[in-house]
Amino acid sequence: MDAAARASQSAPPPPGAGVRVRAPLVESVSCYCRLDTGLKTVVDARKFVPGAKMCMQPDVKPNKRKSRGSRKERSRTQAPLLPGLPDDLAIACLIRVPRVEHPNLRIVCKRWNRLLSGNYYYSLRKRNGMAEEWVYVFKRDREGKISWHAFDPLHQLWKSLPPVPAEYSEALGFGCAVLSGCYLYLFGGKDPLRGSMRRVVFYNARTNKWHRAPDMLRKRHFFGSCVINNCLYVAGGECEGIQRTLPSAEVYDPNRNRWACVAEMNNGMVPFIGVVYDGKWFLKGLDSHRQVTSEVYLPSSNLWSTIDDEMVTGWRNPSITFNGKLYSSDCRDGCKLRVYDPNTGTWAKFMDSKHHLGSSRAFEAAALVTLNGKLCIVRNNMSITLVDISDPTMSIETDSARMWETVARKGQHRSFVANLWSTIAGRNLKSHIIHCQVLQV
Image (tube, rainbow, N blue to C red):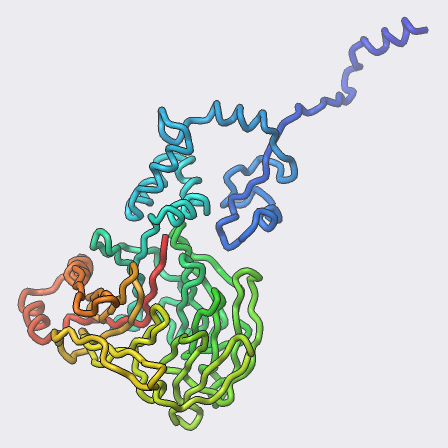
């Protein structure tokens, strides 16, 4: 009987019978290619199922870990980042490559592209003091079209960027802010066709791509916004169809990836100037009766209060808080700056470059930002002046304006006479700056 059983087991299956073949055992790892799209932890990254367009390993199973032996085997079989060097030393070399060359690094090979698509590479650059800051400028031309460009202060170059999302190509009154140093958010605003918006998008300076974010709770445009403790606050503004200004306010927490309501303002307003100073958010604008009103918000207590002191009355746009002090422009072209003294409650003269550029809109100071530890004055003609706070007499004029003229004229043909008259009249301006931010990579 045992012999018959053995014979039946060794006999081939009859024709047409199904054969059960055991799949070979394979090892795989979870794909965390989405870790850089706003996720903060690997645990959150595991929630995504591999196989999407961004997935680098579409055929692996997400729940099975790879053993140490297989990882060592893979490290021996895959090509090194740099021939003849261990990967850790190769990465130490690659993080020293200037940011302007990063697009070229990405197309060398897949491993380099993966390296420059993750947080690890940029955290090393920041830890070793190699992160670079660029100035990002949003401009509106005479036809109402929105364009934006980035200025590399190290190489004195203007860089082209991917087009803004279609909903913001002609939007009015939208907000702009930077979170985590490298994510630039556009939010709210008014679309010429669809009216007020709740939409939120953000640009990742590391991957040079746009992404969606959760919409705001309320449609609004021409509102105030600020960033406190890496959280985005918006307040006031208008909404199409509502015959009054909005008193509501809300906050976006990128760690929770959601919006939440905060206390309403005492009076709704359309802010025309705002700044964060001493941990408080100051807003100044027009109420429903078109009267100037000012309020201050304290995040720790979630309270708004009306304010009307010397700081607010002498406050002018543009302004910025830098190293704990509040600075404001004292003239149209930004050649003079003032600083607020909290001890006396008055504004005092801080800097006068004695180099008055003119009163035309082309030379108007559009924004004050901080760049590489210096105060940066950005004008509508794309000129940038760097001021050393420790020594205000040492102001540095960058070559941004001349370089911008070179970039701008690539796409347009103007006659010599037109260029001459524009130069004489100081009217090279065909657009004006609406937002200016600094991103670090």
